[in-house]
Image (cartoon, rainbow, N blue to C red; front, side):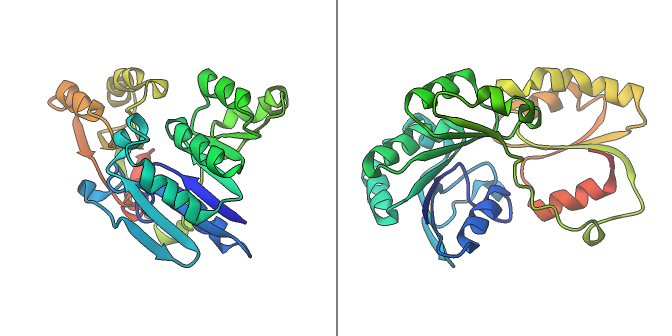
Length: 259
């Protein structure tokens, strides 16, 4: 099977989604082409990655400068995108995040290949639009959506809950007996559905009502973490890091009592 992936990042050291695409490519007969930006919030310091990268049966084409360009001006690189799609000759199009849906839909129109939408949080807008467009399958990362799979499967569209890939190493490889009275949060706070304001309001309670003495925040992709530092940095011990590799993240989680 030939798979075209339209995604927000592809960097195995920083992005767990890359493990999923490598898994696709490892299956007999599969060939995977990935369209992604060259600088994203998962690269250290947003250093540009190579525009073309091929390893095994994974072919990465970083056509866009960054995520904002990919989402806000998806057809800015239309010529390069069409060339990549024709080179990939996909049997199926795997689209991560609704921000990438316009490109995935365009690829489907060019090739006739169906789109599979894999969404961090399926909004009502994308569910309605994708069903009207005849998208046959929507996958949701939200764990509680497992309860509504049957109810949401209708109109020719399957709805399934699928956990996001994490590629967690065996505990023995990073476990530490000595823990710091520290909480740690790793993730983006740049989207309204993640309720960043509520997250910020919760922090004082964690410091004042739990044994937590310090907090590590590893978050990129928005300015919201800096707002947290401005508001609480002088009152509480908060260590903010905009970037970290997956290995570094596991090490920091292992040192912390709360995550």
